[in-house]
Length: 304
Ligand code: 13P
Ligand code: SF4
Image (tube, rainbow, N blue to C red):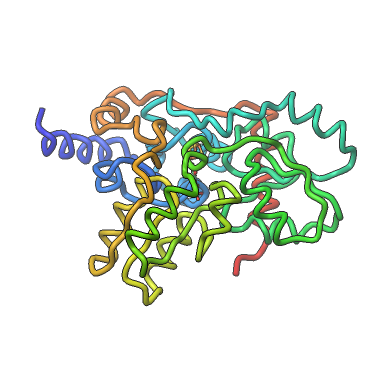
């Protein structure tokens, strides 16, 4: 089947199934091009809850489909590749977190949305890379536990006077970026602005001109007068940055900024998902309700 035929078949089946196709900002270009909506993990889950379509095809990784299933339990959430996981989310288990909490009794747990439903259910409030500092500073407590990303955690710690206890997880894709990579890119593009995702290591963030989430990078690049940008996050973000800013140049400091899990989903997988209506992701009770409270506490914090 040709690429074009596959896209036509996916679109026809999506209409017949009343399905919405969502794609994370790190998905392959052809998946982002096909999707009804692209966005960050939380934005997509909120869209899944908002839409009146009954079926959500979530092109992303497992924890994102779980978040959609937590927020939209009446809908059918399909994940084209069940093996698309997130190594960072899997670095903490509910049991491990319970042990950590026992060592810091009474200290609230702030959990990054890049986490499993079971871990969210053990937490007090969620955060994203876009609102993490605000979420932590909204808490009345003087101490917080930050899970699972140590890099995001240390970034938050620089912007709060609270005592922070970190879980030592990290994103293997962002963690691959080295100071030498950034210095080389700076030498090659001396006029460029370097924007970095808070999942990068503290040494990288210390070199950044602007630190923000994936969605933050789109708005920053659009309004910045700069013409060249060094991009410190997963390669998939380049698709929309380049499409929406044709007069600007975007480069990665290294070709190693690839998340293999985010690249698993192909057009063929999306087509098969719509044909078979699977695999479906569900979150069983009582985990779902507890995880929902954790997400909703975050959503109740006013946005800027
Ligand atoms: P955001 O799109 O929420 O910034 O997430 C980054 C990420 O690593 C998703 O897996
Ligand atoms: Fe997980 Fe990192 Fe991949 Fe995002 S980019 S899904 S945090 S491994």
